[in-house]
Amino acid sequence: MNRKMVFYTTGHILILEAILFMLPLLCSVIYSETSSVIAFAISAGIALGVGLIMSALSYTKNKLIFAKEGFAIVALAWLAVSAVGALPFVIGKFIPSYVDAFFETVSGFTTTGATILSGTQIEAMSKGMLFWRSFTHWIGGMGVLVFLMAILPTDSGRSIHIMRAEVPGPIVGKIVPKIRETAKILYLIYIGLTVIMVGFLLAGKMPLYDSLVHAFGTAGTGGFGIKADSVASYSPYLQWVITAFMLIFGINFNLYFLILIGKFTSAIKSRELWCFGGIVAVSIGAIAINISSIGYSISETIRHSAFQVASIISTSGFATVDMNAWPGFSKTVLLILMFIGSCAGSTAGGLKISRVMLLFKTVKADLRKMLRPRSVNVVKLEGKTVDDATIHSTSVYLITYFIIFLALILIVSIDGFDMETTLSSVTSCLNNVGPAFGKASASFSVFSDFSTLILSFAMLIGRLEIFPILLALSPATWRKK
Image (cartoon, rainbow, N blue to C red; front, side):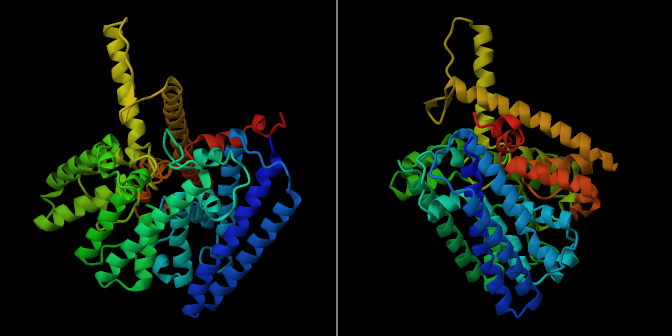
């Protein structure tokens, strides 16, 4: 284990966070929010100081990063940015409890969108704090370390191990030969789509500030809002724009790259994309039929069902209605979508559609093998043969996922809430979705500090897809050999 490289990179991440604090600080200056300016200035100073000390004390000429270092760097860096990112809320006294502030920040960076704040508390926050709250979605959406690789020279040719540990999906690779160029392309696409969305929101007469924070939340598929009713008070046009872009950011970014280089046919043939579209269409239709008797007009029924399906499957978490008041069938459909999530290589959470497809294809191949033991059954995904190692790692991931899921339900159930509250809250946090049902439908503040920390841990596990956190906690990872 190259420990110095782990702490050296984490130090650089904190320095980067100190720089990123300047944006909400500037926002606070523009709106003359003195307490927020002070909070961000102090937090930036702490992040910069700790980052410089870590980088200086851990400097090493050995810049090699292998899989073990990649997992450790990702886990430690995400814990560090979350721990420091919570400071402005506490220093500014907008969230007095550090445990709650940590939960809110982890929820932001992991693009979960679960909150411990009530509607009135959200609207009472300063513009700068709300900007930072939503900006954490945008930072965490593509990955804080991918961002670092995109803007800074990469010393090690093995940075692919960092990307594999941070970018979601069963198969992660480079879209161009150099990993830094891959990171740049991904972020340019990310920025471009964000800018386009801001343009559409401004065209619908949404104020610039509102447009920016909602674009951050949509691009990162996070869902932090700035109003008590999320986006319900905005016009139908703006709700449709957000619906469309929640789905756009739930698509594999590699497909956008293929379109940019003129390979539109290859992109449109993606089976994961077609599966994603099919699930969305069927879910919208099923929910629209189920809620048609509630009292909405036809246009409202279609808009609300489309919005909430897009919000849940993309794990964004915005809302136009109180889903908790919907019939049990609709809530069950949404709960299933929480597990599935969107495409691999997107900013969304969940198991990922490609992983679910791979699971079903593996089961199908095994059933054929049982019927015809001598037959050769090859598992293919996107027209390519999937090797046994990938199938094995996917199976291990799913088994580990459900073991952790059951363990989290058991731990959180100590708080004594009903099963709907506990199950939906754990599902929401582990899959980085945001909304929950039952007593947590309005706010996660109902949970004890212990459960709040456990759910924070669940969000980190979900965003980093389990193994970086588990390996970082293993003593074997930190041994020199």
